[in-house]
Length: 160
Image (cartoon, rainbow, N blue to C red; front, side, top):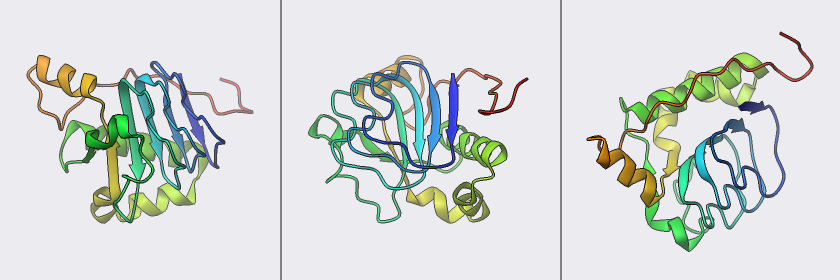
C-alpha cells in the first residue's frame, strides 16, 4: 500500500517494510529497521539508528546539511548516495513528493517542488547492497531502481 502523512511519525517508522510506499515529514529513531523492500521518503528530520538491519528497499531522505553518517546505523553507512538528476530514482522520488503534495496539501512538499533543481541535491538515498546487486543484475547502474507498483491511494477520511 501507500501512505502520505502530512506530519511527523514516531519511532520505528517503516520497520520491516516489505513493499509499502510512504512519504512522511519527519520520523523518530530507528527508521527502516529490518526493512526488506518498498520506498520511504522523509521530508524532514530523521532520528538516530536509521537503516539498522535494512537489507532491501530505499530510504529517500531530505538532508539539507548533507551528512547522514551520525544518524545511519553502521550496517548501511557505506550505502548512502546522492540522487542523480535525470535518473529513475529522481523520477520515483519526485513522483512520490508530488503525490504527497497533491493528496495532503503539504507546504513542505510544495516548497521542495518549487525549487526542485536545488532541493534534489539535498536528498540522499540509502540503498542496501542487495538493491545495488539487484540493479546490476538487470543491467542497470546504481542510479536506477525498478519501478514501484502504481496504486490508487484513498486519503484517510475519504472514501472512493
